[in-house]
Length: 295
Image (cartoon, rainbow, N blue to C red):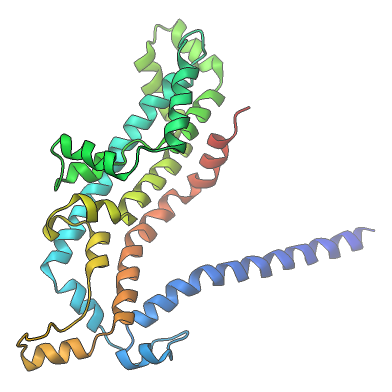
């Protein structure tokens, strides 16, 4: 009987390892393939010869992107947007979630505000009213349009609110007995106890601000204000009719292809988030599970 259980356990573990290995390969292969295409020659990429290793090593696509002054400017704008947007959205989300997590006797209008938030999450005013609102506050072509344009993610507010509600009530009562006020309870008890869900929400917000490109396309009037994702969306390789180029410029453009250039765009866009995620991934699952279910 014990031998059968041992055999069954080993079979189960082996099956798990195989399944996880397949999932790992399916996740990593697109990243590796994109990188291989980005450093391959134009002819090999266009012919579809690149599979698991680059063919004809070439950094022409990266030179085209990195060699542009606007690239570094857009990269810096994206960093500013991600940092400012994450800090602002986290602050607003926590300040909204805290009163909504309080008992109804302490905040009688809790359910009313909750229904308003849910309605706003399901139904939006539309693109034109959103644009006119930002224009009315004179934020067009400003970094604050990118930061404040989507600064209140309702889904994240609900996650934090549910996490706050699941914290032991004894902590709150003990703080009140010790003379703690609402602000003291929030910043000295609730926030330190909520690191997992805050890390998960922070990752959500950071990824959104780093990967989002449409707001930059709509709200920025000049290319020098574009964030990185909007900038790389606009990159094209073409030779305008009637344009006089030097032989070196023609050679440089001939080495490029839309396929290799697009692969370089995608890979560059992924690197910052891939570098940040390992430091937050240990909070990710626990934060989502604890913030998504209310006991």
